[in-house]
Amino acid sequence: MRNVSTKTVGRLSQYRRIFMNLYAQGQTHVHSQQLADAAGMGAAQVRRDLMALEAVGTPAKGYPTAQVLEQLNDFFGVAEKQHLALAGVGNLGRALLAYLGERRPSTPIMAAFDADPEKTYKEIQGCTCYPVDWMEDLVEKFKITIAIIAVPGDAAQGVTDRFVTGGVRGILNFAPVPLRVPSDVYVEYLDITMLLDKVTYFAGNAQVPTSSDVES
Image: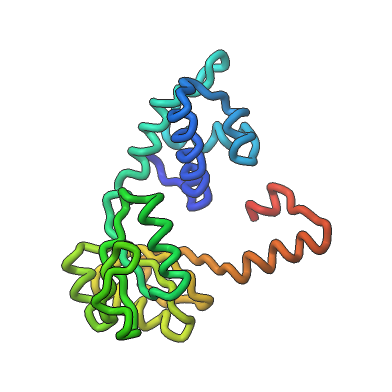
């Protein structure tokens, strides 16, 4: 499979959820326009993205639901076999543990870490919380390759360094700070405050960005 952009990977994840719903409903085929309507984008974009999977559809029937879902599962299969860890078991961390435990059981959170001794050595949302000092050893022991950071900004770089030392190669960062990582570590930033600012701006100015604006 050829290399794909991060935006394409994000859209393929969205298509996967759509195909899972269609398959559960017993729909055997779906046209690109139906997928586009469900995903909120153009049909041509959908067809280009599915070409990355070498998925084949026909004008008459569209894409075979079960086959494309299998291709999407294979595409994300490597990531789904990886183990996760969470740093920060505050309100956001607890919510993430609950959500991911229900929605992504195939990608288990093997350990949570927090600096608060009142939280350590306890099971929180089905996940054991450990002291921060144990991070490197447990990341290696549990073969954790993906970390979620939900700590305050002033603690984010410290836990990032510990995760990377232990062997983590992918990070989802909720802390509102940039992280310094080696070139072989991928970081995805999710700044909820920034996203809310964007929504507030466009809602207040009665202006909706075009698809080209979103892509850029």
